[in-house]
Amino acid sequence: MTDDIRVRMAPGPTGYFHIGRSRAAVLNWLFARHTGGKFVLRIEDTDQDRSREEFLHSILDSLRWLGIHWDEGPEAGGPYGPYFQMGRLDTYRDYADRLLATGHAYRCYCTPEELDALRREAEAERRPFRYPGTCRALTPEQQAAFEADGREAAIRLRVPDHGTTGWDDLILGQVTYANDEIGDFVIRRSNGIPLYNFTVTIDDLTMRITDVIRGQDHISNTPKQILIYQALGEPTPRFGHYPLIVSPEGKKIGARFGAKPVSGLALDGYLPEAVFNYIATLGVTYEGDREIFTRDELVRLFDIGRVSRSPAIFDPDKLDWMNGLYIRNLPPDEFVSRSLPFLEARGLISSPPTPSEIAYVKAALVLEQERVKTLAETVEAVEFFLQEDITYDPALLVPKKGTLADSVRVVDAAMDVTNSLSEWTVEALEAAFRALVDRLGLKTGVAFMTLRVAVTGRTYAPPLFDTMAVLGRERVMRRLGGAQVALQNWERAEPTAVQ
Ligand code: GLU
Image 1 (cartoon, protein in one colour):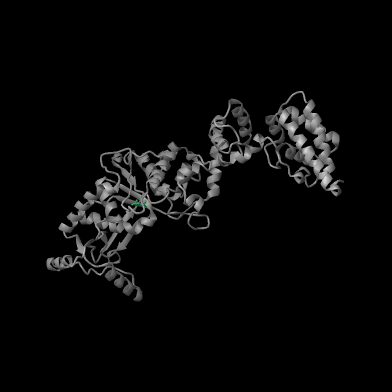
Image 2: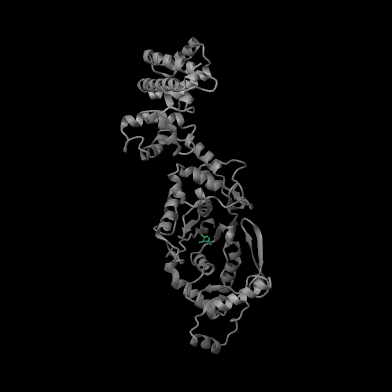
């Protein structure tokens, strides 16, 4: 029975396919895979003024990047095409004619000015605007007169004056609307363009969609769509409306994630598997508090009834955390190969990198794998390994609890150690430098900070001796020399600082 399940997502190519919109894809895809059903992609391109090719690509690229395969739709084809609404105008016309013929819809000749006047009247009386049914019962003669006048008719659905329209929502439970709150609504404009509630219903009907899962922003459309199914004498699909996502402050999600295509997150260094995991678990529980799942586990455990009824919080920090976790779990070679393009793009290594660059960068990257949250962060994290010259902030070479004189001593002595060390390993480096600090009678933390700044140019870096081991003797020598010069210059510039 379950292999009859058919779900869809129906984006309009009128804006970037951002995180919020991709949720429709993730949830519908999980539902389809869980039930062994089909996931259909349909493009709502009837808004020709706003539809753009670039946005269509952003939808398709983003889905592909997330690893979401559509069973039917653009490029994939399928038995219920075309999958672009502009290719389905004849079908909409046929169904509109059918509704006119059965009297479930009628032609409305009201002009925009007349409707505006009614709307203003309602506003003045502080009541919600409902179309009063002016054209509901026009005689053929009256219609002919309007047509002779050059008026073009819109088509409205005749909505029952009384009663209610409701459904048992897969996520929200029972939802009911009073019909008299809905009013006869336009299904096709006077310029012949069919409107969303009508086209989406005809599409879902003719594509045999069994479950419509979409955002709660569409909830007030659903009674209208149900009324269309009823007018056509067709059974309605099941509906599920998930709450939208909001920022941790309860607002719309910001530009960083709200206004760019999901596939663009690749350039920011997010892993598609992490983003998929995050979107899939946003406002959905699978197994207790657990948040990290493989794609197969998500498919197996997905249950539409476990989608939360309250808004899901999109927290960029949480996404970063999850991305970092996925990065840590990558096999080192894969982490390296996925990071290289970021370093190439910044010109830190050649493009393509040479084998010796790869080997060096790999040793450096592996030290950072635990720490970076996005692949883009690897640039900043390993930059200092690759720079020929380090520019020093001399003040950093003298830590808070240290003195200029001590910094000079430790850097000078470090040069001797570096020069004479017989074995260039983490262990040998550590033993030699600890002994050195003891010999000079300095505080380890302070002296090591000076050395860290000397060899990396910064106060924050991976463990000192791992870093030195990767940098190699020559680079360490050169950098200690650079630090020495920086300290001397400082000494000259600020003699009073010498203690
Ligand atoms: N184009 C609509 C949207 O992307 C489709 C809504 C629906 O799923 O019915 O929001």
